[in-house]
Length: 305
Image (cartoon, rainbow, N blue to C red; front, top):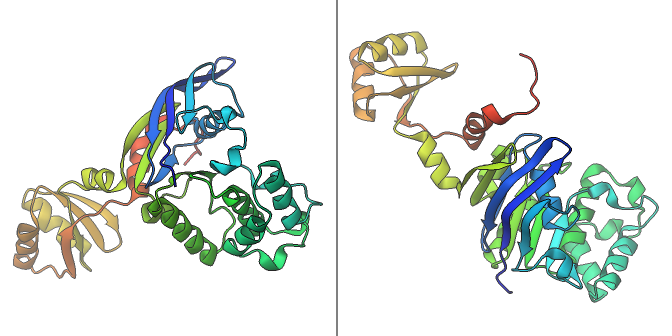
């Protein structure tokens, strides 16, 4: 399996006076699942479309394996992509849709059966796409992306419409493909899912990169030295800990985070005050918390609260 990177070099794309992508540069490396995230309007979809030669950048370069996507004569044999699971004609049977794609890209006919099996669609092979549920259409789109056994996989919202079994399946599939040395880029709004799936994260805001780092490093940096406390006496814990000079934040009905004291000191203060607690340990930020804090100032559309 060749090791191919995805590269964006100073990409710019505008629509009238709106700057969708603003001198965007990043590299997606093989062997990792890379999450591609950002608020609505951050430029994710536009960037993916430029990578796949569906939109032309105003300036800059989009490369896959060191070449523009349009230079691949049979692109599906190198790059598997899913941007829109609705792109299948509703009257076309699943197997026929995949067979047409295989013939167009010089892919052996037997591969159609293989990807139907991989995606769990064998029993639906002769059914028309118009009768598919959202989850089945998603699986068909993933089957199409896998058809050429590609070294590079680009998926937009791959878990959309999938049930819990399907989400577990796609998570395992993506991680196994990365483990084989493939380059996997997934765009998603589900931070909890990315926390369990992605190795690396590229965060966009208003067309620019806000972060390009490993998920582990991002969580470690954000978690810092805060201590998490679980207690049935939140008021008593607040009083005791603030009295000891800590900065305390309420994070749940029975949980607090503490800054300014180490774990041993927090436990000692609570014990001395007679405050019951069931847990004291390092606070671990969730990827959703990190993402929300990082992108708060870059949200284009937000609801009134």
